Image (tube, rainbow, N blue to C red; front, side):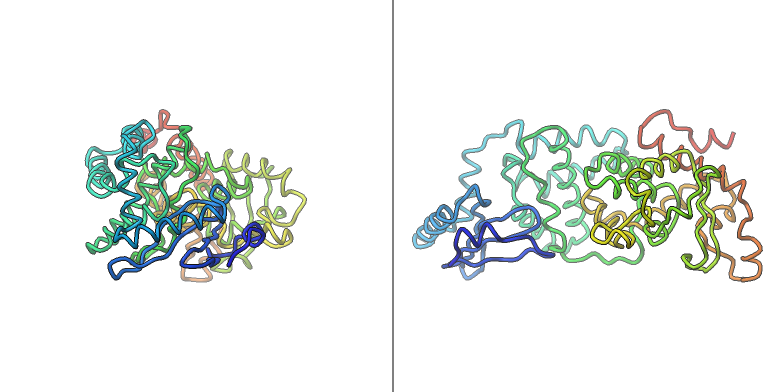
Length: 404
């Protein structure tokens, strides 16, 4: 059996884990909370009853709730069903219910989306979400509530739809937090890995302008490490591979010449690579200088400052922002490549050279390594300016206007 001291000393690990008490009661310890759960069987099925979070519910409180649930079982009542029925009868649709906030989010969020896309998102909410959690005050919704409705979608064989619905719910929670609702936390990140995986055939990347704008605004509002935030912003602008960003060294950066010269030893194709620095990228480096400028790496490892940033940092930040299934660190290259190719403003050779997709002819590739540099300088500044316009939703210079 557990003691209060054991519970207080329990620390998060790499993955959530359980501390067992007695008679099915256990404490689920994850990265941000300690949650009481009661495991039981009803109608031949293994089920879990969510009691609440520690220390709001003490050890004695949790044991009492477990005993109450056992009494319901003895009377042939499913405690989880009884709890949900109680919520339905005691919680009226209020300004803080999930449905009200979700509809408000939809009305605000979908102003820049196509009518068809906006309708699809609302249909998903109305068909698969509101019936289960729409009436519940948003601060009372737990990860298990969300997982239950997502599993019902999975059982229909709609795996991709389950993942998309999960992302929508996460966005509603982010909106609720941003607008000052009484929300303890977003439970959706706790469901990472809980659903059947999608079939992924390539790096996930966002390429539609409206979706890029949403991603850029989410990055701008990122509340984690400022160094990680700068890495995300840099990834948007420079068209580099994740490893080339996280291993960036201050010795490679020349702010006066507005160039980042990456040695061949770091490049996939083993050729020196030049990245022209836009005004926006220079500002990112200037913001980082007082923080990491005294170190070798622009983005040092949190635990080992003499080593570069972990390869999981950027993808982890994207997951925390709610884009883990639609965007990857490598996807920023596809985002830039797709948009710049569609612009018809810059030759394909210019774009490919900036992506360091080198010619298969090694001699010609070495000869051409600095080719198109003037065009690339213009392109990189144009790309950063375009990203600013998308993020700010201001008067964006369209590709058609730029061509004129």
